[in-house]
Length: 122
Image 1: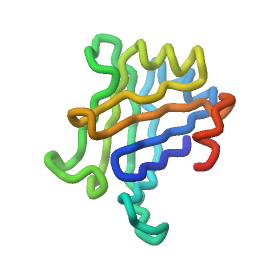
Image 2 (image 1 turned 30 degrees about the horizontal axis):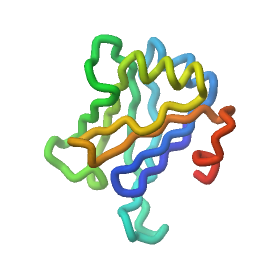
Image 3 (image 1 turned 90 degrees about the vertical axis):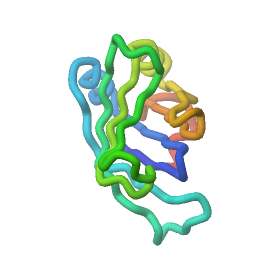
Image 4 (image 1 turned 90 degrees about the horizontal axis):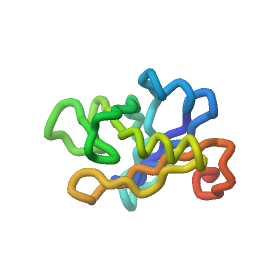
């Protein structure tokens, strides 16, 4: 998994094996966070996990640790996605535009095998 965030826009590229695994298990990686306007020297590495939660109402929910910490200064971030968002990723190779934090954040998930060129720059 490759995970990159510029501000609150988060792009995560997954292998087909990771996509299959996340149907029943959490997957973990490191998010390379860069604040808007920061250069590459300002990149911060934050542990993340992604879990599919079928009974969740929102496409994506985000928990930051410690609570009430700015996204880019978190010690750990947990993303949970609903089953519809997961099915979109599995079927089309991309699930884009799920909003979190009252629509200020955005989570985009991509298969490394998808034809989308957006995620390949990360």
